[in-house]
Length: 142
Image (tube, rainbow, N blue to C red; front, side, top):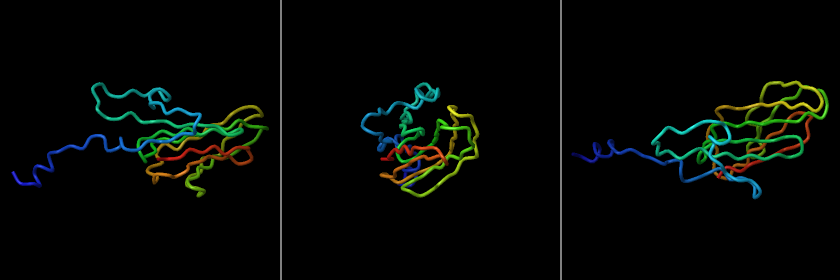
């Protein structure tokens, strides 16, 4: 059997094992199924996705992924007054995604998610803001 055929029959497992989402010192990485209710297939050899989350003032960030791939990115905001606001998603200070307008009453909260953000280079700082809501939580992809 020539080299090409042997190479084609090999499977690669654990490509996403090498890197993980890094959270702030007070946070803990946990398998995504614990935070989002998903379960891994029985007998699966794949690594469970990791989550990172944190809050700053009235805004929180929740990131799910493996290695440098972010598979889900959510944010919430506690509204200081009755208002409509828009979630902003930042990577290294550059606006990379904007949610739709969300409205709520004073003391209420709103949520936005980006279901397929994609890959970010290791060391990328991802952050969330909401228009007219104080706070900018961030996490680092590593």
